[in-house]
Amino acid sequence: MRSNIVRNAAKLVAGLSGLLLISISLSAHHGQAGYNTTETVTVNGTVSDFQFVNPHSIVSLDVKDDKGEKQSWQGELTSPNHLIRAGWTATSLKPGDQVTMAGFRAKSGANSMWITKISVNGDEMKMGAGN
Amino acid sequence: MRTRWLATLILPSLAFAQAPSTVKPPDLSGVWSVKGSPATRYLSWSFSKDEPPMTPWAEERFKLTKPSFGPRAVEDSNDPVNPTTLSAVGCFPPGMPRLYLQPFPLEIIQTPGRVIMLFEFSHFVRQIYTDGRKHNTDLGPTWLGDAIGHWDGDTLVVDTIGFNDKTWVDRAGHPHSTDMHLTERFRRVDDKTLTDDITIEDPKAYTKPWGGQITFALHPTWNVMEMVCEDNVNFDQFLKNEAKSKK
Image (tube, chains in turn orange, brown):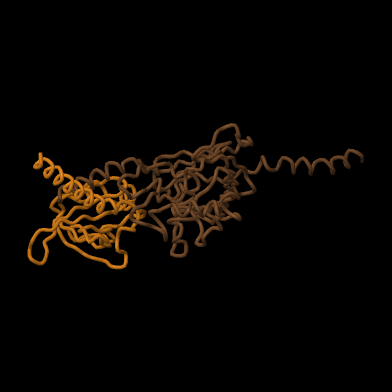
């Protein structure tokens, strides 16, 4: 009985931790209130995923830190419609592509940014308007 | 002599009376998007850089709004269209005039007796009747209101009433009542530019009329594309999965 309570309490804590993580990510959902717009950070890495979806497209990167360890980064772009008008397609980024992205980091300190500039395999991509 | 006198008197009057129907109104058709500049950065969230003069009724409601955009933007927004909190539904219609501030183009299709606006954002259709009909006041309040228009020279004057009070006037959280009266004056100032002078009157919410001017740029090569706000749900799920995978 007691072990059940402990197990359930552990599940609750784990669930709440999950919710906290989710909230942190979702806070970046609309507008730029979740980002520190006074400072620009730049990361280089390899594309692990590209979601060409509304309301915002998402770039996932594997980045090596100073110690050579892999860090996962997420960059947020505007909607596919704006990107299409700027020349993008759903396959503009493919897993394995080398990307440099610069932008405003999440205030939470997560490895997440609102992208303001992005280069793919050395070519700078035109940014679409809109948020 | 008498005939000539009559002709002198009547013909100019007839010509004057017929003039409005013979003047072809300018064509506003095309795909347009709001043209911003550093001076009009406020168009990302409202129609004026100055705070509108709210009544106590509006102030009370304004304090409860937590927008995603503008100077009061917060991370736990309760914006009915673009919220940032996990439990918020979102994607309610932005309504008028806020639809112009959603950062997506619109297409104007002008036909005799009707001007149609196709908004890319969630594909709202706004119909402005220019066939001389009066407002239909028998209908209940609606998200976009009841819009009628007429031509004042080269300017399309659009009068809209009959709004519900579920929307914000803008993306900054300014409220309005069901008494809101929207007046717009559209003018194609050149081939590639359209202006809309917007006046918002709502004595219950504002102590005097307010608004501003939006400038639209023509995009001859653009189409209105699919943009479904409810895709936000998929986006939330994606972020949720991402968060779980990084635990």
